[in-house]
Length: 285
Length: 274
Picture 1 (tube, chains in turn cyan, purple):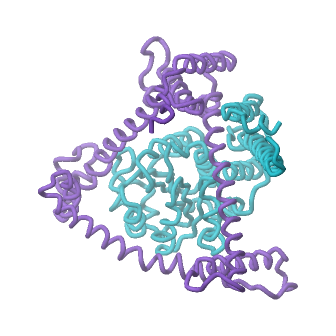
Picture 2 (cartoon, rainbow over the protein chains, first blue to last red):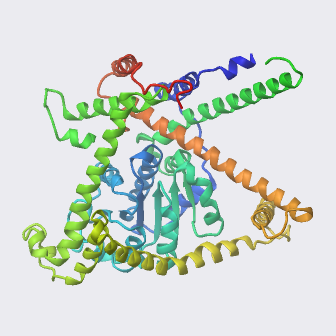
Picture 3 (cartoon, chains in turn orange, red):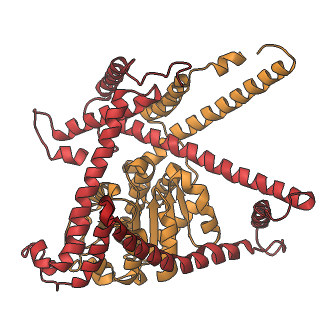
């Protein structure tokens, strides 16, 4: 039995993990999600801001983190546009993510009828994290002469209300890398806007010191953070039930895999301890 | 990629979006085939990803950065369309932007050994600017704010705060202090210092455990995202074909990839060859 676990081909483990992921999605299984307090904090800030507030949104990710962060972006933007907030969005992380940003806003145009340059603007990517963020603090349209589609920005109606970081009411950086820290260092600390982070699950634990210190007002962590936000959206806006909420659906697969991994870790350790005991007794494992 | 193909409609009587979708499905399976073993299909998909990313970088940076933000500010009348980008066309030329442009060019001169030394000017400027901007804000936000956040009330239960508040504060206090002691190498870790540094090790292990658990969760999420794409057409939730046809085609593609790729991975080094 011990040898069975040690000799288990790794492809077999991949196969059962694949089954644990695919089956719940194919069957359309769903489960209850209990929102975490740090996700609820982000939702409540957006909810409590008066309609038409200015949201600065850092779409700081690329395709390698798309499965985790796109559902988060979709849920967050839906909330912003339900509240009729103005969204100014940039990508300070990488060029590769610009297409995803354009797709996200194009989806919002279809769902809410929002117009680029009036209800939102997606300014795309410019190289240099620190200088991009600092330029937003002082004069947005002087630095971002055009939006991501090459349309001149200075004459856009949205910039009559938003000149620089001082006009921002809340900032969220949904990020694959460490850009939320850059937004704290060069953005929030200089312009004074409250901010939060949406991040991959890998970075989730490392942002808690900033949450504890109050430098971040909330955190959305990985697919679970996205599922939390979707759950809060559905609870507060029942019409959102009709929309595709992928993160919530993904939670069943996520839970199945976690249970599976726990079982495998326990079995592996039992096998290891048993083999060690046999070897110490001088027997053959 | 799907957007690209959506504009490329009806090439062979099939909407371009569907062609794009199936290419993406094929490439996804090529990438996942690495789980079995390294093979030419994985290499093909990997190289395509790198090539397309770099091509996209180059074109985007030229179109969205160098053209409008650098050349457009120096010679706007040559760069912008007078009818569609009137306000940019009419802006005054700002010749100061020649300077950062030159510094950027100097960086590329590393490719010419005789002139490579000029790239140090650019790097010196960049590092000097970066340090000047970063050091004060790092001090304020990383050290002072974080240190302040550890000065939390440890006593005073019954003042309205829940017990969990004080438990958290004690954990932060003990964890930060013991981890700092662990990294204090000027004193030998014996006696009280040794015990405290052991607590520090445990604190670090717990932090690493939390990070590792989160990393596993993240990797599973990525796989869930790909699974969603394979089943639900890239997240839009609209199936192009009935699901059973789609599933059958995906399985057929996976089986073909398996059999064609079988035995084509890099040869294992023979024993003793090293």
